[in-house]
Structure formats: structure tokens, C-alpha cells
Image 1 (cartoon, rainbow, N blue to C red):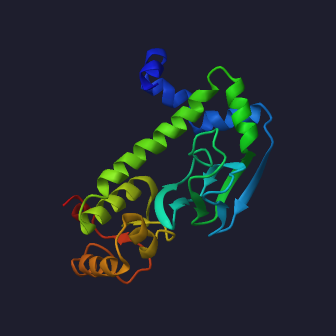
Image 2 (cartoon, rainbow, N blue to C red):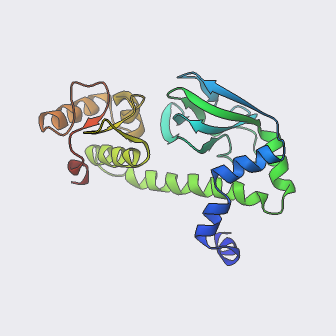
Length: 223
């Protein structure tokens, strides 16, 4: 499949033409009905093993993907919730939870799929969404083989690359990335998380008194 796409377009062109903005514009231009709304923190958008009747285009905010209460991944600005499974399967693979207040466009999933399948190149939007998700899961599976502290460092490095904010002096993660959320994501126990947190704090890498991840240095994450 990927080889066929490369024959038609370069990787750069594929990502430019079939990205989030163009996907959303395509739906809006074709007058696919939608609701623009704000989703409160901790709201479950879609439940695993239940029919996911809506597709959410995330304008702002952070959403977690969970399976059997295990955090699998996160979605942020300009990402899509509700199209991570094969479009012919109605049952959702994941529970999608708003970790913070989110602004979204909510479309009927059937209407989205119907439009894409009616377009000559519509299927590429679905393919790209699956490819991005599957590639990330492969990287996560490889990371989970590492020791606990290495897994935490890897997860934090990945999240900082996507969701880092700054106070002008230090890098940090949004408050929704609590120790509980991160320990679940990295698949380490809360006890191990507490021990590593204290160790990093004692070494001056993080603000141990804060209720979020505030980093005084990022060099230790590469060690």
C-alpha cells in the first residue's frame, strides 16, 4: 500500500495534501453536518468496545487513548479521535478521555466514511490516519521492553516533543500529565514512580514539590 502511494506522490506531498487541515476542510466544504463544542475535563468521548458513532477533530486540548484502563497514547491539537480502527468495524478499540478542556468538531462517523469512500482519493485520509497511529504503537511496544526508569525517560521525551510548554525559564508538561497518568502510560507502578520522582528531584532535574512535571534540565533524559 505504502509503495503504491509513493509511486503516485512523494512522502512530503502525501503529508501536505492529506493532513488534518485539509481533511477538516474537505468535510466542511462538503457540508458534512457537525457540532462545534467544548468538552469538559475527564469527559469520556468514546468508550472501548462500544459503537463509536462520532468522529472528533481536536482543535485544542489533550485526549488519552485507553484500553482496559491502560493508557496507550495521547491525541492533541489537530488530531482525530474515532477513526483509529478499521472503518468497517463499528466497535471502538479504545476509550477516548478528555484530560483537559477540549475544543472539538464532532462529525457523524457514518457521514465521514461515506464521503471519503465516494471520493477518488478519500481513502488516503483514512490510510494516513491509520499509518500514523500504527507507527506510534510499534515505537511504544519497543519502548515497553526497557527497564522502568528508561521507559519513563522515553515516555517523557516523547511527550515533551509533542506537548512541552515553557514558563520562559523551564520546560514542563501540561498539568493533565500527572504522575498517575505518566506512570500508567509508562507501565510502571506508583511506588516506582514515586521513588524515581524523588531521585530526580534530589538530583535537581525536576521540581519535586510541584504537582506537574517541571524540568530544570532535560539532559538527564538522554542518559
